[in-house]
Image 1 (tube, chains in turn cyan, green):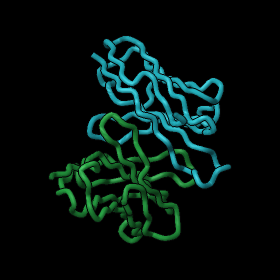
Image 2 (cartoon, rainbow over the protein chains, first blue to last red):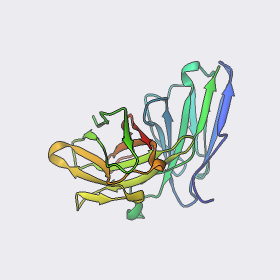
Image 3 (cartoon, each protein chain N blue to C red):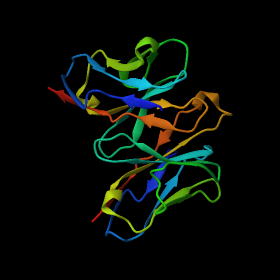
Image 4 (cartoon, chains in turn blue, orange):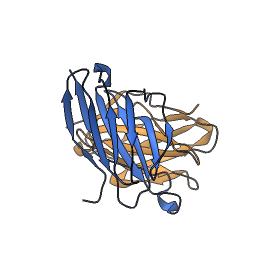
Length: 118
Length: 113
């Protein structure tokens, strides 16, 4: 499978615990995005990486959230001291850079990680 | 600021009937426009996209969409709906030269036999 993969697919945790999600993008894609999707809403942008550099962060990304992409390949999203309001689907997407104009601004999404905070 | 409005939270159509899902956007420049479909437990799949040129774009699974600049709309259509089309549909606008894609709240499509 050469698509975007995410792990785990489901995570149930208790309030106050830390959780970490992983995203493996399509191998030749240098751009990686994290989104959050709550019930009845479309995905909301959280953060964006170009290679290993985190170039943009949404105001939705509080200081309890941190994302990394240490070698410009896979990425992790960590939530510290989880709150019930963090319950959502966390989506990862990747896309090729400007070198491939046919794919410009077309993102490929992973299946998501569904987080439930009790 | 950019925004996307999908006026219909849910729509029910009979199998074999035609479908139109509405999308209105707010964006200062010429937008990149997308329609995605999301089935339960699945990630988002791109149906079609508009960057420039012909305002009527064809996508996968028999879908098409028409860009109307004067109405700031990008409605999705399908002439004959199949039961397998039941899903959530999202319209989105991408920043020209930027990073973000802004999604609408989605329209859930129900298909009745």
